Image (cartoon, rainbow, N blue to C red; front, top):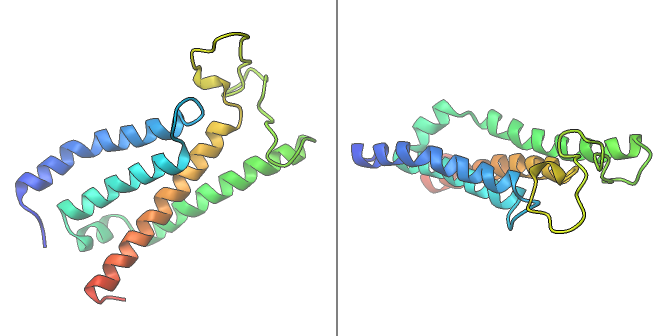
Length: 154
């Protein structure tokens, strides 16, 4: 069952803002309250918004269950690989191998008050991205599974 044109149009207008806000929460997780789990939940809320505006069947045709499972797997693999790179670099498991390298997320932090530079997080932003992907995939699969049980498709 499709919703009215007003609901679909409103969801279409709101969707980019929800996605940008979710990605903002993920990327700024080491500087502000939030992070991968919270941002992933917000992004999954955008997925729910699509389901409400259109229908579960329409969304299942456009976004496959396999894609969502692969998103979850990608997040888990990125998380584990980031931790294992630390072992390969000769530091502790989940060690911050990007600290003070001057590369992406490895800018040294200046002494004193830090206004919050995105490049100073080390491996934490990478871990937040990994968790965000995993939560997005997992919550979306759970939502689709719950809707299938409610409709009697399972």
